[in-house]
Image (cartoon, rainbow, N blue to C red):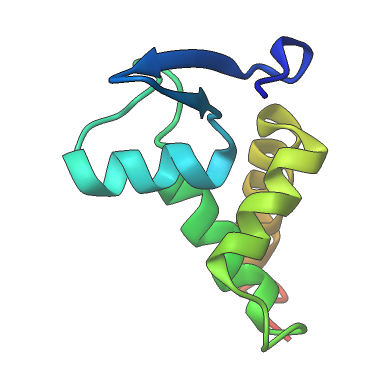
Length: 106
């Protein structure tokens, strides 16, 4: 039932077998339910997912938070963090030396 090569763990309780599977979406739901940062010092995944989702909605209005989590899962947390950081930096450029503002959102 559980596939350990995909990070799944099989547990048995009261005669039932279950698979623990922690995807990005599952971890976000756990963070939201508990109000805690599941992975400790790493970034709060539900925040990363929400920021990714919000940024994607401009060009992909039908996208869901779950799909944003699936995208993070596919690209990897580090790559997703890098992409969000880059997009946020581009959205809020530093003012030019002459005091004129940057390009800003288009």
